[in-house]
Amino acid sequence: MALLNHRLTNEEYDKHFSDIHPPFETRNAALVEANRCLFCYDAPCTKSCPTSIDVPKFIKQITTGNLKGAAYTIFSANIMGGGCSKVCPVEKLCEGACVYNLMEEAPIPIAKLQRYATEPAIHEQWPLFTRQPSNGKKVAVVGAGPAGLSCAHALSRAGVDVTIYEKESKGGGLMTYGIAAYKVTPQFCQEEVDYITSIGGIDILYNMQLGKDVSLATLQQQYDAVYLAYGVGLARQLSIDGEQLEGVVDAIRFIYEIRTKGYPEVPVGESVAVIGMGMTAIDAATQAKRLGAKEVTLVYRRTAAEMPCTQAELDIAKLDGCDIIWLAAPKEITGENGQVKTLVCEVMKLDEKKSPVGTGELITLNVDMVIKATGQLPYMVASPDIDNDQGRVLINEQGATSLPGVFAGGDCVNGGKEVVDAVQAGKEGAKAIMEYLFEK
Ligand code: SF4
Image (tube, rainbow, N blue to C red; front, side, top):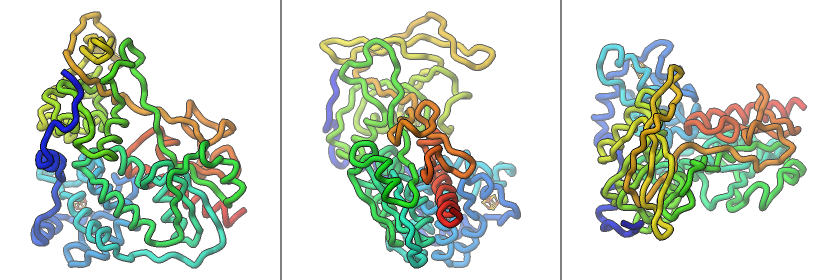
């Protein structure tokens, strides 16, 4: 057994990584679904969206053929409404709240309708927003991910000149580098970044890392305010023997390589264990299978009732042929000639507080690759002077950090949530910065 790349033909890679949620094939198909909407008063779908997209309004606009109006409704609330239509866990957000669930009927396919309205706007770069004349204020945004882009767009609309400092060579953050390619392609992510910046007044400086290529002190001196949105980045370690063996990789790194190198170039084992049961674990497991691994086993120390991923995500992993071992925690990774040979797990049980407790019983999996997906830790790159809680930047109710003129939002504050939460954080950050700039 060994890690190998080029396990499949190009045709097989293309098939395995094609769009998992294809769009409506015809306009009529979209209209049939849109016309099922009951246009609820005080719509629960809108209330369950972190960005409060007016769902009944944009669906109504679709039914009347007003696609530009629908796109504007969506983007006004969520400038990454295109990407979110592909990656949001809608079964626990808008679609999960749709009243049709109470009638035991299929909910309105809100994400698919959202995609129907936003995709042409992004592909064709519809100029739906105009920027206010420049008001002379300059803001630096650190990170061109969902929170940073959302904040930058809102500020630019209000006439602020924004410069984004991005450590990677592309924008989009987690959307571009950390999500399975069969949900959203790198090409779409690039188009979405281009669309957001097409409003003007947003300059992205790539390959510029805070703390390495530019300091926070410099940004504070050169700009009227700073917004920190650099996300999280350190993979949580297992802290068990064998973790340094060849074949043990971080899920985030694994997905990053798939996104940046291309499918054939990324080595994958024949028999892979993925530790964790969050969305990143599922994305890593399904992509390992789709890269050509023969067996993929997800290992989780609790039960399905406690898993962080949604049932829909778990179903994708099952449909891809991934096995699941519940109530098992990694104990040791053994190797041969420096390469992973087995993953030893301890069987767990849950105590009365649903915390996993070891039973002493061991199980051994013969694997040649172990992918760690047990979460990410925030890391403090801004400044040691900024108030933080184990790396998570602390902000007050106005979104301000402990440093004057420095605001923060998104994953570097909350430790890692959904893309849609980061977009909302960016909007709130922009509002707080505007108040700061024009009331000080
Ligand atoms: Fe339409 Fe469902 Fe939202 Fe009601 S809850 S407005 S039916 S999408």
